Length: 206
Image 1 (cartoon, rainbow, N blue to C red):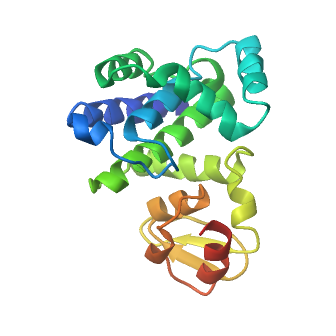
Image 2: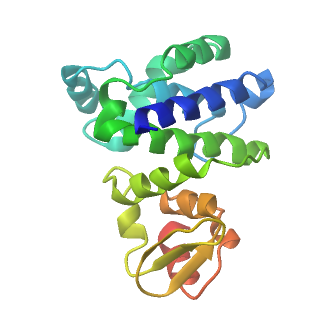
């Protein structure tokens, strides 16, 4: 299956999960600093319909800072109700525009990580299909925006639940999903990992 189809499946699964949330859960904090669940959803769809000149305008408005630029997109969509955000997501299941970049890898990586940003604080676990999780790990390690490569430089990552490993150096071992989230810079997850390289990785993430 191609990456755009995998990203579509990931977004569809997220949409189905969001449909089950209470109004209070939509307002709950996510793993993204200062963002609620609704803000994460707003962010995910905020780039879908932008043309190149629209992206440039947003970058300028965000003063060419990634965090400020992302905040601009959240502010633009964040006033919408959960029902409106969910409808917008359902209308944009298949990636287009900027998120369709690299064959859909941007949308897939973004979708898997942000799905977990929402689920983890709510305490609702899931099993991510390996066909989505493995490309998301590749995307997190290779996408400059996420900067995962720099966090894990000089370390060897080894998934304990999938046949996957990357890098060289002291090992960091754990479930592939936990590795993904730490590679993406999420805090509070390092304790789920083990190995002689964990302390070094913790210093770069926590």
